[in-house]
Amino acid sequence: MPILIKLLSHVGCFNYKSWGNSHCFLGGFPIYLYLMTKFAVVKTGGKQYVAKESDFLVVDLLDAKEKDTIDLDTLAVFDDKGNIELGAPFLASKTTVTVIEHMKGEKLRIAKFKAKVRYRRVTGFRSRLTKIQIVKIN
Image (cartoon, rainbow, N blue to C red; front, side, top):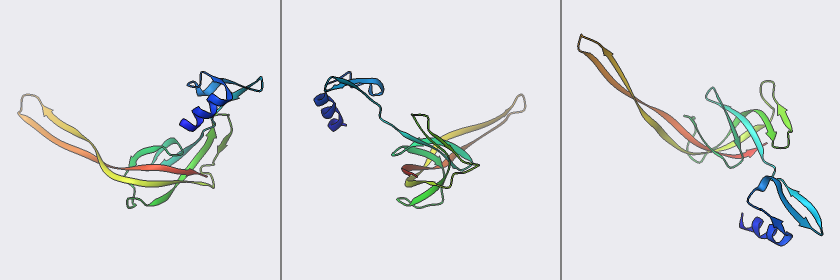
């Protein structure tokens, strides 16, 4: 990021913090900077997630060891320019992810109560989760 800011300051950009529509002048002509980002809709555990490269996601437990690289089914790929690829139901290309760690979710408290009969039951539940990082969107 500092390299990009340094580059923009040499070009003569104004308002470099609003990346979407920065007005830069190079040789007297305006340059509009758009940092194109590629997004993918991936499916795992019966759920769909929208992610871009180098994003971290917390999903249901995957059957893989830590630091393993696996491929997830890709439903759609799109970017902020409006280019869209839709699968029917999946695309031929897969999204590559790396398993970062396995962990447990927040503890849920489940209480049962019936009035006037002294019936009270309290149990708990913690879901098992996997933290993954999107490596490459093909």
